[in-house]
Image 1 (tube, rainbow, N blue to C red):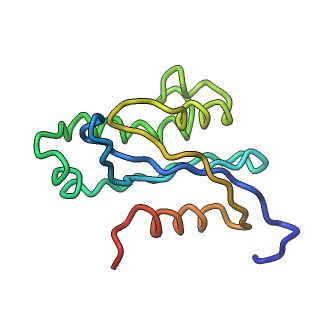
Image 2: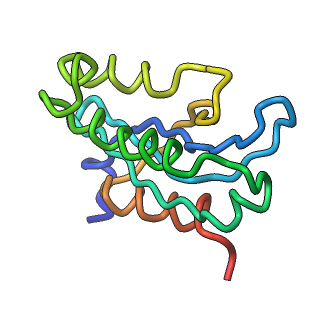
Length: 133
């Protein structure tokens, strides 16, 4: 559906793994996309563990995996996401993209426009997270 009457504006941020915060090196590991008008908040995570380990061979992968796995749960909301899952959709998005100095960070928030949010999320994952072919 490419009819501009049905397009919506969305916000997104790239999820980054920063193995050694003091070095500032990171790899992109996922995308969080939010569209308040369509009550849409989803994240897709694809961590390339070999690339992360290339930045820090001593990286605590189990901890990184667990933290990344929580992001889609928080997006979905509900009891499985704990107290954060009880927040309204927009507040969950803002909490997820808040600046922090930790091994999991997000980019600045960017804005886009589309008529298919799932396709936009897939496109961003392909373009920003997956290694070039």
